[in-house]
Image (cartoon, rainbow, N blue to C red; front, side):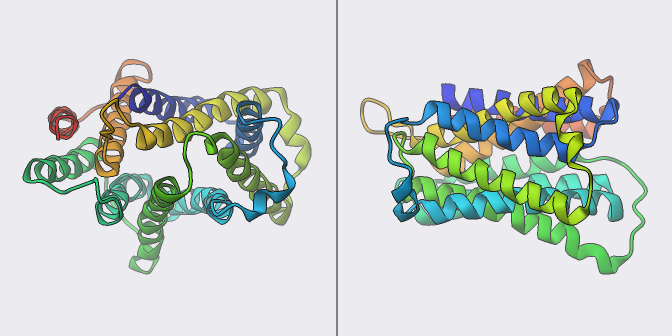
Amino acid sequence: MIFLIFSILSSTAIYVIFKYIDRIKIASFDVIIINYITASILGLLLSDTQADIFPIYQNQWFPYAILIGVLFILMFVVIAKSSQIVGIAITTVSNKMSVIIPITFSILIDPLDKLTNLKAAGIILAILAVFLSVYRKRKIEFDPRNIYLPIILFLGMGIVDSIVKYAQQYYVNDDVLPLFTVILFIMAAIAGLVTKLLRKTPFKALVNPKVLMWGILLGISNYGSLYFVIKALNYKDTYGGHIGGSVVFGINNLGIIALSVIIGLLVFKEKILKINWVGIIISFIAIYILSIT
C-alpha cells in the first residue's frame, strides 16, 4: 500500500505543477519535453549500470515501452486539442473516466484479480465518485462533430494504462522496471522533440531556466507516478498475496482526484461544488471497500 500512496502523491504533484505552470504562463509542451528527459535520466540512475545496452531491443517488454512512450505524447496533444475545442469540463471527465478500461482489463487478464460482489460495489462507487468529483457546472457549447476528441481521449488513456498493466503482468518485474522506464521515457522525449520540430517552434525555449526548473520537478513527479504504480502492481506480501490491478487503478485514480480537489481548494482557492464534496466522500468509501477486497 505504501507504493500506492507514493504513486498518488507523485501524480498529485503533477497536477500542482501544471497549475503553477499555467499561472506563470510557461509553455507546457516545453516543460513536458524536459520532464521526459529528466525521467529518462532518473530511470538510468536507478537501473543496473552494468547492463549491456545493445540487446535491449530483444527483450519482450521493449515494444511496449516504445508504444507507451509514443502514446504519452499523443495523448497530451489530444488533451490540449480537446480542451480548446470541446472544453475543459468534458475533457477532464473523459480523461478521468478512462480508468474504467484498465480496471476491466486487469480483471480479464489477471487470474488473481477476481471480481467479487464487494469489489464490484467498490468499482461502481469509484466510477460514480470520479464523475461527481470532477463535475463542473458549465455551459457546454461545441460542434457535435468534435465529439470524437473526448472519445479518443477516453479510449487512449484507458489503453495506455491497460498496456502498462499488460507489460507489468507478463514482462516487467522489479528488476527490469528501471530499465523499462528508461526506454519508455526516452521514447516519449524523442516523440516530443519530433512533435516540436514539426510544429516549427524554437528549441532554445527548452533551455529557459524556468522551463528547466519546472520540467525537472515535473519529471521527478512523473517518474514517481509510473514507477510506484508498477511497484504497487508487482507487490506481493510474505504470503504471496497481491493487490489486484483493478484495486490499484481504482484507488490510485480516486486518491489522485480527491487529493487534487482538496489541494485546489486549500492552495489555489478553487470553488468546490457540493456535488464535488459528495464525490470526494464517496471516493473515500470506495477506497475503503477496495482496500479490504
